[in-house]
Image (tube, rainbow, N blue to C red; front, side):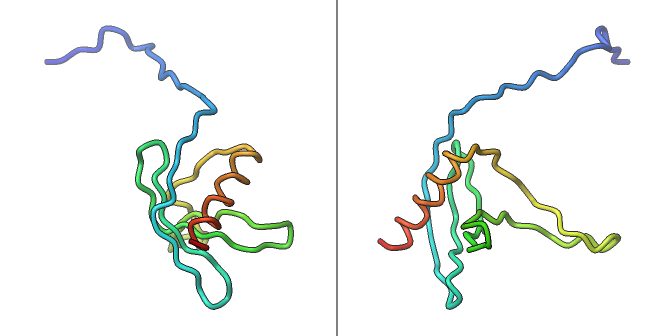
Amino acid sequence: MATRKNATTQATSKKTNDLTYTIDRTFTTDDGTILFDATVNDIKLYGMRIIAGEKGDYISFPARKFAKDGKYYKYFYIEMNDEQTDSFIQAVFDKADA
């Protein structure tokens, strides 16, 4: 039988500001929404959108409606500061215009 020798181990997390990405594919809808896929830190992410909101453009991540409470929950989220977000959105616009 397997036994645990150290029951008080803690998970460690590494927080860094390094964010490398490429915008792989874009599609612009008739209402101006940009759908796109990206590779962020070597992880392929599908189904994101740039939406024009009242406070400016923002990134919308894929979400699914949960049947029990009717709320939408994101599949994933990329934590970015304002500068990284602006740069990311600009890269999506550049790829969509190309």
